[in-house]
Length: 445
Image (cartoon, rainbow, N blue to C red):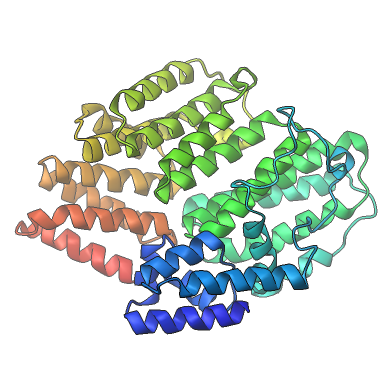
C-alpha cells in the first residue's frame, strides 16, 4: 500500500507538472524526500498526505488513499505502535507517571500514526553504508558506564558534524545506524543506578538526530526523534534534557510555519523553570520570541527578548549540561537577532538591535559553528538589503555564501533563497545582480 501511494503521488506530480524539488518546497520537504516517498522508501503521515493532496490539487485522492495505507498498516501490524525496545526500570510500566505528574510523553502531536509510519516506512532508510549491523554488533550482557560513554561519544561527534557541515549527507546516513545500535542497548539488563544515565544518553542522541533531520528538511523524522528525546528525558527525570528537546521542537514547528505550535512547545519546556539554568530559560524564551515574531506580536516579542537578556546575564560557568555548550554569547545574540529580524521584515517594526545582534553572532561564532554563522550572515544581508544598504548587504552576503557552499543544510539554502528574493527589487545594481547569480549557482550546486 505504501508503494501504491508513492506511485500515485508520482502520477499526480507528473500530471500537475512540478519537479520533486518544487513540490517539496510547497510542503516544507526536500526534493529527495519527495523522491523517497514516491519510491516507498520514507514515511508519510496523514497531515503530509493532505498537504501533498492540496499542493497537487488531487481533489482528495491522495487523502483517501493514505487512509487505506493506514488501515493496511493497522491490520497487518497491530503492534506497530509499540516501542521497538522495552524500556528499562520504571519506564516498563505503561501507567508510570512522568515528571509533570501525568502519563509519560510518548509523541509530540498525539498522533500514533506518525510513529507507526516512521517505524514501518522508515525501515528502508535503516541501511545506508551498512550501518544497520551496528544494532546487533557486540551488545554487552549488562550495561556498564563505558557503554553509556559510547552513546555520548556518538551524539557528541554527530552534533559536531551537524554544526560544521549541516544535517544532510554523511551526518544523516551515519546517525541512523548509530541510533539503532544505541536503542538496542535498552534491551540489555541495566543496573538501576545507571538507568537515568542510560536514558539521558539515548535521549541526547535522539535530539541530535532530530535536529539534524530538521536541518535536512526530513520533518516527519525530526518530529519523531525529538519526541523520543522528550520521552527519554522524562524516563530519566532529566529536566535539562527535556528543555533541550522542547526547544528543538519549538524551532522546527516555527520554521515550517506553525509558530503557535512552536510557542506551545517552548512554553511547555519552561514548565518548572525554577529547575532550569539561566541559559536554558533564555534559550526557550528566545524560541517564544521567534514564535511571537512570526505571528507579528510586537510587544510579546520585545518582552520575550528583554526577559531572555535579563536571565542570560545571570548565567555562570560550569552550571550547564555538556549539550548546552553551544549556547554562548554568540548563540544568544544570534537567536534574539533572528527574532528581531522577523519583527522588522514581517511586522514592519524596525529594530536597530536586530543588525547589532546578528553582527555579534557572526563575529563570535567559531569555526565549530559554521552553519550558525552562515545563517546569521544571511539574515544580516537580507536585513541590510531590505532596509536600504545594498552595498553592505552584498559584502555580507558573499561572506555568508562562502560558508553556505560548505554546508549540506536545507535551512541555509532556504535563507539564501529568501535573500535572493529580497534582492530582486535592487537587481539593477551590478553588485546585487552578481550576488543573486551566485546564490542561484550555489543553490543548484
